[in-house]
Image 1 (cartoon, one colour):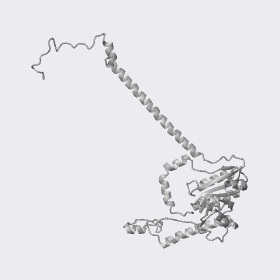
Image 2 (tube, one colour):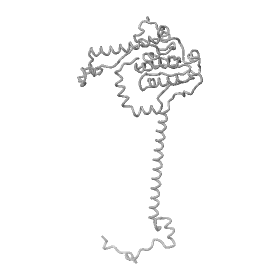
Image 3 (tube, one colour):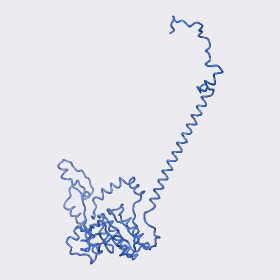
Image 4 (cartoon, one colour):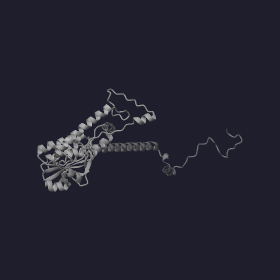
Length: 347
């Protein structure tokens, strides 16, 4: 409300038109200071905002395109790596000694799998420049199936290509690794190498006693009375234990026959515990006929094969394959490992 006692200053007329902000002479200076006083400033501002938005969208599209092309190039690189293997060309004709490494656990899907070892051996045997093949072994053992496949292929390739193949042991050549070595022409070891362990095992755990103490009930449904006899939470009957032992004995006999056939008269069969799963030093292995003599790769290449140049034919997982296994097979690998824990192992 208007104060009734308020008095307007002398000479004030509320209906008189407002005085212009500035004279015509001062207008340019005010417009320079305040762009909103310029005519058409709204349109100019909208145009600037529109162009800024378009430029931002163009930059975003360019970045998105660059990102997609980068990922595409990355996957093309991975595919190229997957297609290329780390094996030498078969065009090599100069005289050399071919080396194939068998390191770590002998298992399907690993670097020492039958797939990789056999592929490398085939390349080496087929190379005209390879005067002999050396299996460089450092393995505690693994799958008897993988070892058997490699052993059979060694015999086939020797007969086909008429080339010598030798085993050279580094630290360890035990169980499935020795299964493979026994198929070669000669076995060379270091005096401190670990050699032997001609035996088979099937390991696991049983928790039935613990479950009874803590009051846990195992609910396992099977179709077939023996389907779950390797389940660690269920008791094993005498019949099931006898069945598993008979299977292990059969595999052990197969192992012994391979060693006898491969080593022949060089094997000292009267050695106590020779096929009991015991292992010996390299020096003892030579004494018992499990190995032939002391020597390393360079010695075999120089003195036995007579080709000092050494070429590595080992086939391994490349970067792309390792990434694929990590990202695409994590769950599957865990399932396979859980199933393989109940299979016979030579180690």
